[in-house]
Length: 259
Image (cartoon, rainbow, N blue to C red):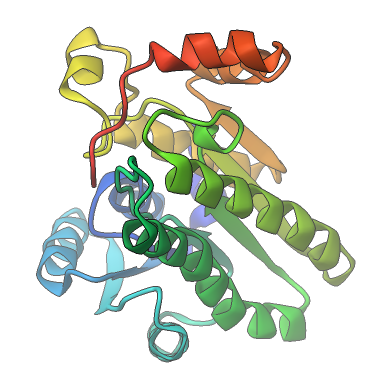
């Protein structure tokens, strides 16, 4: 259960706020009385999310921004903080998935740029203020793909493994300054990335439930949150298998759709 007493009045900045988990995070945080700032490339869709939040009595501001552009991200963060107040919590949810088999260098670079550099650009923009204030909370959305290499998704799996390590290292560095870091590891969540087969099978968690898991983990100061639990357990158990056995299992998994 999300605690309004925790979120009330907090300034929460979220990338990838136009769809999927990012959108659900913005809606849920605003419903818990946070002041929400949403960043994404599609300004018209962000406006729809803001209208939904305002209609429900929440507070939200939006800015269209490409997270791969460090200068644009820094400018957007400054504008949102001027509107909503200094960021108490920053959630990097923006992500890109592209099928990269046969290995395609250009498509792979786009995935790495969005998922890894986009996360770093966002955190680099909010961290100086948090360090000055000696408080704050960073949260990044990695993936179960960070621990299991998926079919036709070498770049995506690599990017999420990089996000995992980025968050782990930042947690060590941020701790002395009183800044907390949470890593989220979603599995099958009902976003544009999952396949029609997975959606029809009913194994995908609704995005709103995924958002609630992440927000509660932030409230509780957890270093990591993995979900859905059964899928997360399977992924972690796969890492314990010999490589040949693990690969035989992974080959039978359906590849994710592009988003």
